[in-house]
Image (cartoon, rainbow, N blue to C red):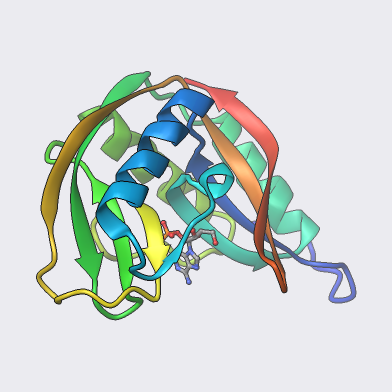
Length: 180
Ligand code: 2AM
């Protein structure tokens, strides 16, 4: 468990994620441009990411605990193949996903979830579904889905990110990175 809390300490909104390089990012942006046109609020290309585990707004001692947990994660590099669009109706999110989830990704997410539960963060109960959000507040048929040109993303690191919300939208900052 994290050390004792200082209730006046400022909180940071944190999450672990995979962060694409520029070329992969441009491929996702191209898929979004081609497939979504005016559907929903597109994620700006520079913000595209794959969330692994969401911590929410946490105080400094929970951030330290999460970083210690990540230090203890041993995971292998892997390559993701994104090849289809899908839709989550409740948050109205259009995403790109993979037909096949590499075991190394599942093991990485499980290890992070286990580590975070030791920091007092309730782990997400649902099985992990790798999805890279392309647009929010989209209006499409609930069963919307379509294949897209495959995007190969070789993954050799994961990251801790801070999210800040401004009137102009979300701003993400990589705080720390861990090689796989
Ligand atoms: P998603 O778009 O892949 O679903 C940073 O805010 C990221 O954390 C978001 O892009 C979102 O990932 C995820 N996220 C935000 N709020 C969340 C919540 N309440 N539960 C789980 N994940 C959340």
